[in-house]
Image 1 (cartoon, rainbow, N blue to C red):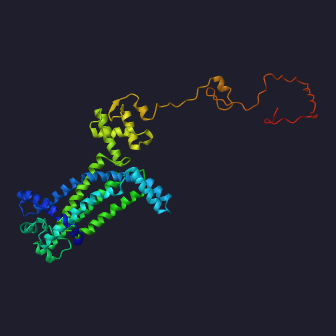
Image 2 (image 1 turned 180 degrees about the vertical axis):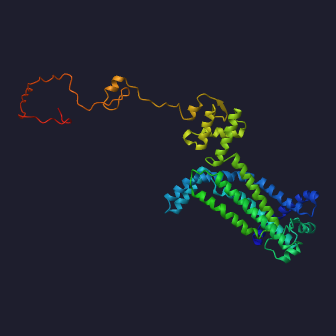
Image 3 (image 1 turned 90 degrees about the horizontal axis):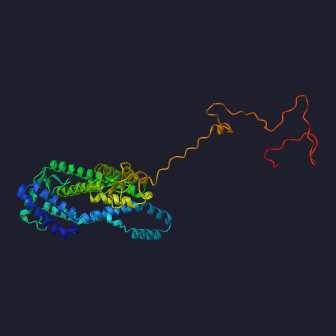
Length: 413
């Protein structure tokens, strides 16, 4: 770790200068040798760095969403060209270029923050060794070595020996209790941040390998932080805990205000937006109008379940979303939300009594009697004369004499 930190020594002077400037400010309030002055200086350094990294964080969010949307296409390319790795890479790069997606954008905030992290580690390591570094001179070095956070010196570590901790005017028990609590909080905040992302801000209707990777990271990263944390000075733990809490709060804001389409967070957001819009009769902010405008711009078939539920909810309340993101009163909103005027189910025409009695099957609804199964005689048939046998018909030419077998109904006449 010390070797890696020395590689970023070129940024040591700017980092130490920022810390000293914040120390002057907080030292005037809490005292220059207190842990509050030095601890808040490190916290302020984190806040300043993270504010500068907000544009990269926005790119990270967009890149992560694009990667989630591209996962089905990426999986199809991998299956199609699984025997040709070169063609597979070419098709992947082509897909990234067409969609404007950069896979490395999701790592930009971490990569940009790494030099400051290692520079701070390098500064605190030199303070623990009693060496001046950057703009921290002898007087500031003595002040920093005397600063304690809840009894633990800024430069002490969980794995330090009792002799080294005693040289910093502290006890090993205090150092290990403070560092253990901070390591647990650091790992827990990392786990909650990743869990919040997986449960609320992922489109659960699309099952991709990317989701499995995110789930693995949710459990692996906290373990990595816990293992590495025992070798971090208290000041670095303050830095990393602060940046984890900042990331957690920043992500909560993004999830609540700009959720991923199709996610649980979008359902909650559109539910709040529907309630606010129907109660006030208007979309009350420009950002919310942009959300409604984006939903209206989609075809009905392209909207996800959350967006269709939102449009239908507006329609039931008597509102219709407009292309500019506003809403207006509409009496036909329900029909438009359902994709056209509602069609009533066609009922069969009611038959007359005479037609029902002439039916082949079925009971008569009026009489409740079943139709007779006996064969009725034709109306034009003459009744037989009693006592006289019926005259035998003469066979036609070409027919056999005698009794004729009845013709099958399906035979031709």
